[in-house]
Length: 211
Image (cartoon, rainbow, N blue to C red; front, side):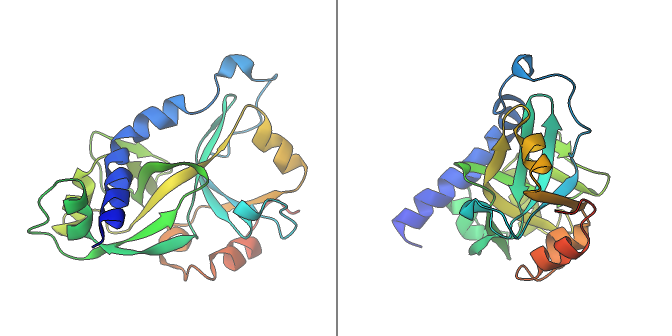
Protein backbone atom coordinates (compact mmCIF):
# COMPACT_ATOMS: atom_id res chain seq x y z
CA UNK A 1 0.00 0.00 0.00
CA UNK A 2 1.39 3.42 -0.91
CA UNK A 3 2.55 5.83 1.79
CA UNK A 4 -0.08 8.35 0.75
CA UNK A 5 -2.89 5.82 0.99
CA UNK A 6 -1.57 4.58 4.34
CA UNK A 7 -1.54 8.11 5.75
CA UNK A 8 -5.02 8.74 4.36
CA UNK A 9 -6.40 5.59 5.93
CA UNK A 10 -4.68 6.49 9.17
CA UNK A 11 -6.53 9.79 9.29
CA UNK A 12 -9.83 8.12 8.45
CA UNK A 13 -9.65 5.34 11.01
CA UNK A 14 -8.12 7.39 13.80
CA UNK A 15 -10.91 9.91 13.32
CA UNK A 16 -13.49 7.30 14.32
CA UNK A 17 -12.54 8.23 17.85
CA UNK A 18 -13.78 11.77 17.20
CA UNK A 19 -17.24 10.73 16.09
CA UNK A 20 -19.14 11.22 19.36
CA UNK A 21 -17.66 14.68 19.79
CA UNK A 22 -18.54 15.54 16.20
CA UNK A 23 -22.14 14.47 16.62
CA UNK A 24 -22.59 16.69 19.67
CA UNK A 25 -20.31 19.61 18.81
CA UNK A 26 -20.07 19.99 15.03
CA UNK A 27 -23.47 21.62 14.72
CA UNK A 28 -24.08 25.28 15.56
CA UNK A 29 -25.53 25.81 19.01
CA UNK A 30 -29.27 25.59 19.48
CA UNK A 31 -29.28 29.08 21.00
CA UNK A 32 -29.25 30.35 17.43
CA UNK A 33 -32.14 28.15 16.33
CA UNK A 34 -35.19 29.98 14.98
CA UNK A 35 -38.55 29.24 16.60
CA UNK A 36 -39.94 25.75 16.97
CA UNK A 37 -38.08 23.00 15.07
CA UNK A 38 -39.84 20.80 12.56
CA UNK A 39 -40.25 17.10 13.41
CA UNK A 40 -36.87 15.43 13.51
CA UNK A 41 -35.74 13.56 10.42
CA UNK A 42 -33.15 11.59 12.38
CA UNK A 43 -33.24 7.94 11.36
CA UNK A 44 -34.65 8.66 7.90
CA UNK A 45 -33.06 8.88 4.48
CA UNK A 46 -32.85 12.12 2.56
CA UNK A 47 -33.09 11.55 -1.18
CA UNK A 48 -31.77 14.30 -3.42
CA UNK A 49 -34.36 15.55 -5.89
CA UNK A 50 -33.53 15.29 -9.61
CA UNK A 51 -33.42 19.09 -9.60
CA UNK A 52 -30.75 19.19 -6.85
CA UNK A 53 -28.60 22.17 -7.72
CA UNK A 54 -25.58 21.24 -5.59
CA UNK A 55 -23.31 18.87 -7.57
CA UNK A 56 -21.89 17.48 -4.33
CA UNK A 57 -25.28 15.92 -3.61
CA UNK A 58 -26.39 14.88 -7.08
CA UNK A 59 -28.36 11.60 -6.68
CA UNK A 60 -27.21 11.42 -3.06
CA UNK A 61 -28.96 9.34 -0.41
CA UNK A 62 -28.16 10.57 3.09
CA UNK A 63 -28.80 8.74 6.36
CA UNK A 64 -29.73 11.41 8.92
CA UNK A 65 -27.94 10.69 12.20
CA UNK A 66 -28.95 13.80 14.13
CA UNK A 67 -31.56 16.52 13.52
CA UNK A 68 -32.79 19.02 16.05
CA UNK A 69 -33.16 22.77 16.51
CA UNK A 70 -29.38 23.15 16.25
CA UNK A 71 -29.15 21.66 12.77
CA UNK A 72 -28.54 18.24 11.26
CA UNK A 73 -25.82 15.71 10.48
CA UNK A 74 -26.11 12.97 7.88
CA UNK A 75 -23.93 10.38 6.17
CA UNK A 76 -24.13 9.76 2.42
CA UNK A 77 -24.48 6.00 1.89
CA UNK A 78 -24.34 5.64 -1.89
CA UNK A 79 -21.01 7.21 -2.87
CA UNK A 80 -18.43 4.38 -2.66
CA UNK A 81 -14.80 5.25 -3.28
CA UNK A 82 -13.23 1.81 -3.05
CA UNK A 83 -12.55 -1.24 -0.93
CA UNK A 84 -9.65 -1.87 1.45
CA UNK A 85 -8.52 -4.90 3.41
CA UNK A 86 -9.10 -4.66 7.16
CA UNK A 87 -5.52 -5.69 7.80
CA UNK A 88 -4.24 -2.71 5.81
CA UNK A 89 -6.66 -0.35 7.52
CA UNK A 90 -5.48 -1.49 10.95
CA UNK A 91 -1.81 -1.29 9.97
CA UNK A 92 -2.42 2.25 8.74
CA UNK A 93 -3.13 3.35 12.32
CA UNK A 94 -0.34 1.38 13.91
CA UNK A 95 -2.50 -1.57 14.93
CA UNK A 96 -1.60 -5.20 14.34
CA UNK A 97 -3.35 -6.50 11.26
CA UNK A 98 -2.78 -10.16 12.11
CA UNK A 99 -5.76 -12.32 12.96
CA UNK A 100 -8.21 -10.32 10.86
CA UNK A 101 -9.56 -11.06 7.44
CA UNK A 102 -11.86 -9.54 4.88
CA UNK A 103 -12.25 -6.00 3.64
CA UNK A 104 -14.46 -2.97 4.15
CA UNK A 105 -16.13 -0.67 1.67
CA UNK A 106 -15.09 2.95 1.97
CA UNK A 107 -17.60 5.70 1.20
CA UNK A 108 -17.54 9.44 0.83
CA UNK A 109 -19.95 10.37 3.60
CA UNK A 110 -20.18 14.04 2.69
CA UNK A 111 -18.17 17.20 2.05
CA UNK A 112 -17.71 18.31 5.68
CA UNK A 113 -14.58 17.23 7.60
CA UNK A 114 -13.49 14.42 5.25
CA UNK A 115 -10.92 13.36 7.85
CA UNK A 116 -13.69 12.27 10.24
CA UNK A 117 -14.69 8.61 9.96
CA UNK A 118 -17.91 6.76 10.74
CA UNK A 119 -18.91 3.10 10.86
CA UNK A 120 -22.61 2.69 10.11
CA UNK A 121 -23.83 -0.79 11.01
CA UNK A 122 -26.73 -3.05 11.91
CA UNK A 123 -27.98 -2.58 15.44
CA UNK A 124 -27.33 -6.02 16.93
CA UNK A 125 -23.72 -4.95 17.53
CA UNK A 126 -23.13 -2.63 20.47
CA UNK A 127 -20.16 -1.13 22.29
CA UNK A 128 -19.97 1.66 24.82
CA UNK A 129 -19.34 4.07 21.96
CA UNK A 130 -22.33 2.91 19.88
CA UNK A 131 -24.97 5.51 19.02
CA UNK A 132 -28.38 4.19 17.96
CA UNK A 133 -29.82 5.80 14.84
CA UNK A 134 -32.95 3.64 14.60
CA UNK A 135 -33.90 0.30 16.12
CA UNK A 136 -32.14 -1.34 13.16
CA UNK A 137 -29.24 1.02 12.44
CA UNK A 138 -26.41 2.35 14.59
CA UNK A 139 -22.98 3.94 14.34
CA UNK A 140 -19.91 3.19 16.46
CA UNK A 141 -16.88 5.39 17.12
CA UNK A 142 -14.14 2.89 17.89
CA UNK A 143 -11.31 1.30 15.95
CA UNK A 144 -12.20 -1.88 17.86
CA UNK A 145 -15.25 -2.37 15.64
CA UNK A 146 -12.95 -2.92 12.67
CA UNK A 147 -10.99 -5.57 14.56
CA UNK A 148 -14.27 -7.21 15.61
CA UNK A 149 -15.43 -7.24 11.99
CA UNK A 150 -12.15 -8.81 10.90
CA UNK A 151 -12.42 -11.46 13.64
CA UNK A 152 -15.98 -12.39 12.69
CA UNK A 153 -17.41 -10.78 15.86
CA UNK A 154 -18.64 -7.53 14.38
CA UNK A 155 -22.04 -6.42 13.09
CA UNK A 156 -23.72 -8.43 10.37
CA UNK A 157 -23.79 -5.35 8.12
CA UNK A 158 -21.47 -2.35 8.06
CA UNK A 159 -20.09 0.42 5.89
CA UNK A 160 -17.26 2.85 6.54
CA UNK A 161 -17.60 6.49 5.50
CA UNK A 162 -15.48 9.57 5.95
CA UNK A 163 -16.86 13.06 5.91
CA UNK A 164 -20.47 13.98 6.53
CA UNK A 165 -23.22 16.33 5.42
CA UNK A 166 -24.04 19.12 7.84
CA UNK A 167 -26.80 21.73 8.08
CA UNK A 168 -27.05 24.70 10.41
CA UNK A 169 -30.18 25.75 12.35
CA UNK A 170 -33.19 25.80 10.02
CA UNK A 171 -31.09 25.09 6.90
CA UNK A 172 -32.39 21.60 6.24
CA UNK A 173 -35.96 22.74 6.82
CA UNK A 174 -35.51 25.46 4.20
CA UNK A 175 -34.08 22.96 1.74
CA UNK A 176 -37.02 20.64 2.38
CA UNK A 177 -39.45 23.51 1.77
CA UNK A 178 -37.63 24.21 -1.50
CA UNK A 179 -38.17 20.56 -2.49
CA UNK A 180 -34.43 19.90 -2.77
CA UNK A 181 -34.91 16.65 -0.85
CA UNK A 182 -37.49 13.94 -0.33
CA UNK A 183 -37.52 11.46 2.56
CA UNK A 184 -37.63 7.68 2.62
CA UNK A 185 -37.56 4.97 5.27
CA UNK A 186 -34.05 3.98 6.28
CA UNK A 187 -34.41 0.34 5.29
CA UNK A 188 -31.18 -1.51 6.25
CA UNK A 189 -31.41 -3.52 3.03
CA UNK A 190 -31.26 -0.25 1.10
CA UNK A 191 -28.46 1.15 3.25
CA UNK A 192 -26.23 -1.93 3.09
CA UNK A 193 -27.29 -4.42 0.44
CA UNK A 194 -28.74 -2.69 -2.60
CA UNK A 195 -26.43 -2.15 -5.57
CA UNK A 196 -24.95 1.29 -4.92
CA UNK A 197 -25.75 2.33 -8.49
CA UNK A 198 -29.43 1.64 -7.78
CA UNK A 199 -29.79 3.05 -4.24
CA UNK A 200 -30.95 6.47 -5.39
CA UNK A 201 -33.48 5.04 -7.86
CA UNK A 202 -34.99 2.71 -5.25
CA UNK A 203 -35.03 5.38 -2.55
CA UNK A 204 -36.65 7.89 -4.91
CA UNK A 205 -39.37 5.39 -5.78
CA UNK A 206 -40.04 4.92 -2.06
CA UNK A 207 -40.02 8.61 -1.18
CA UNK A 208 -42.66 9.82 1.25
CA UNK A 209 -42.26 13.54 0.60
CA UNK A 210 -42.55 14.44 -3.06
CA UNK A 211 -40.61 17.17 -4.79
